[in-house]
Amino acid sequence: MKIILTEDAEQAAEQVAAVILARLAAKPDLVLGLATGSTPIGVYRRLREAHARGEADFSRVRTFNLDEYLDLAPDHPQSYHHFMRVHLFEGVNVPAEHVRFPPSQGDGLLARCEAYELAIREAGGIDLQLLGIGRNGHIGFNEPTSSLASRTRIKTLTQRTLEDNARFYAPGEEQPVLASTMGIGTILDAREILLQAHGAKKASAVRAMVEGPVSAFFPASALQLHPRVTAFLDPDASRLLTLREYYGQAATYSRRLRTEGRL
Ligand code: F6R
Image (cartoon, rainbow, N blue to C red; front, side, top):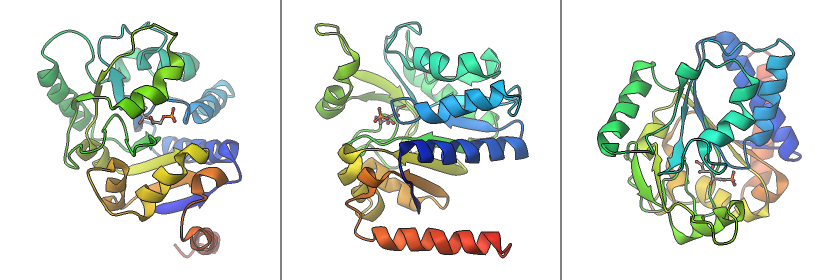
């Protein structure tokens, strides 16, 4: 896993957005796997701004979101459909028919989860997957003990995840306990993965993801099995890493080789 130690969350967002824009320039029909939550908001703002400046054309891009709450209507303010509309899709030109979410309404959910997997494969697979990380190590809504080979399916959210997300719900408002999510196997199939973590509350999760054993009890540790993951960490999120200094040095040497055109 490549570790990038950033000065702050803003610099991380700048760097992640720059990678996405570079991949888009190289492949106009890029297939993006998208995350929601507070972590990617700065990245999405930069993509909207790049599009507004005429620097990024999303007309051939296809997107697959990681997850969605079960039974929240797409226009519900806490739904991930709504989140994506507000933070990204209203400000870029991804055609509506290129935007996909795992199934979250109605019946036949498992068959439709399989259809979601098929749609990803038919699109040629995900080129670039964005991720955040939950304090309990979830990626997407793959909660602890999710199979490391799991595919898109319905998951029950843990108490910890419900507590972490309770801030978005009004007191007394019903909070969904179920969600559909890409599996860990689905995520690991992406060609490249960019993960961001910001803030002290993510520090122990980041340590377990980067330096802990690979374990279904800590789903993000599965990313150690992927050959092309970059984690962008702000100082608070990286502060518990045992080899923090080494990661900084490694990034400097790799930048030097790249600048010298030797990679
Ligand atoms: C969201 C998702 C989750 C979040 C994670 C972190 O689509 O899949 O895994 O990335 O819960 O959430 P934030 O960014 O709000 O800290």
